[in-house]
Amino acid sequence: LKRKKMRTNRMLFVLLGVGLFVLASIQILYNEHKVLKDLHSDDRHHQHSQAASVNGDADTDDGGAGADTDTVLTEDENESISSIDDAAALESSGDDDGDYEDKDEDNNESLPSPDDATTNSKTKFANPCISGDEPDCNTFPQLRSPKEDLEEYLTANPNSPAAHFVELLKEYLYAEPSWERERQTGCYRFWNMTKCFAGMGNYNAAPTDAARTAEELKMPFYEDTDGSEGTVFRAFHFQNTTKPMPFLGTHVVCLPLLLAGTTVTETGVVVELGPFAGLTSKCVGMGLNKARTNPPRTNALISYDTFADIANYNAITRASPWVKQSYPEYTPDNDDFLQIWKDIVQYEYPTALGRKGFASSKTLSDD
Image 1 (cartoon, helix red, strand yellow):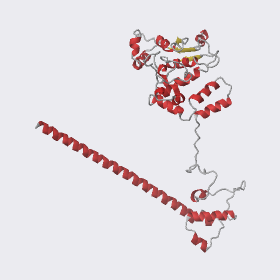
Image 2 (tube, one colour):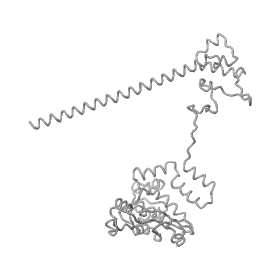
Image 3 (cartoon, rainbow, N blue to C red):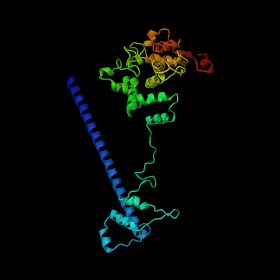
Image 4 (tube, one colour):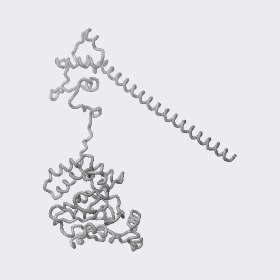
C-alpha cells in the first residue's frame, strides 16, 4: 500500500508538471501573437499616416505640385496620372523645361525640394541628409581599427623609439582584423592560454593540433629554441614545473610585454610598478632575452612593489595553493613575497631586480 501510494503521488506530480508546462506554453504563444498583432497595427497606422501626409501636401494651396509650379495638366495627362510616383516623374520633366525651379535668393543656385526627398522615390540626391533624421543619413563617426591607428603613428613617427614596438604590434597582434579579438576571447572567455600567450600568428602556424598544445606551442621569438624554453606552458607556470602561477588577470598582456622587451636597447631599462607575484615581470624578461638589436644592459628590468600585505597573501595563496607548501615561511603574519617574485622572474631573466617600496628619483638613480 505504501508503494502504491508513492506511485500515485509521483503520477500526480508528473501530471501537475505537465499541466504547468502547457499553461506556460499557451501564455508564451499568446504573448507572441499579441506582440505581432501590435507591430502589424503600428505598421498599418504608419503607412496610412504617410499616405495622408502625401495626399495632404498634394491638395494644399501652397504645397502641391500644381500650386508651386506653372505646369498645366491636360485632361489626358490627368487621366494618366494615377500615383504619386507618376506625378513626381511628370513634375521632374517639367523641371527640365524650366517650368519648376526653386531658387536660393543669395547665390541663385537650384535647391532640391523637401517634398521630393520624401515623396519621390525616383529622385536621388548626392547627399541624402537634409534634416539628419533620414534612414540613409549616417551622422555617426566612423570607427577606426587599432591597426589604422598604428599605421598612422608609424607614418608620423617612423624613427621614434616606439616605432619598432608599434611594428611588432602590427605584426603579431593586428596582422589580421580578427586576430586580437580572438586572442583576447581566448584569454578571458575560454581560458585558452595557447592563443592568449602565443598569439594567433603562432597558433595558426602550428602544423597540427598536437603542436598547438601549451606544452608544445612556442611564444614569438622562441620558435627555434629547444626544450621547454619559451613554451606557453612554461610562461604561466612556476619555473619548469606544473605549478600554475598566481596572477590577477594580467595574462592577456604577457604577449605585448614580451614584444616590448625585445625592443629595449643597450641604454634602455624597463621600470615596472606593481608586478604582483611576477607574471608580467617574467614576460618582460622573456622579451629582454630576445632583444634583436643592441642587447640591453645587465640590469634592464627593475620592478617596484610593496611585496607584502595580507590582501596579496590571500590572493596568491588562493590562486596557487601550492605556495603554502613550497614557502612555509610565507604566512599571514609574514607576508613578504619578494623571494617568490625572484624565484619566478629570475628563473627566466636572472638579473631582474626587485625593489620594495615605491619608485623615486633616488631609488632609480641608485641603479
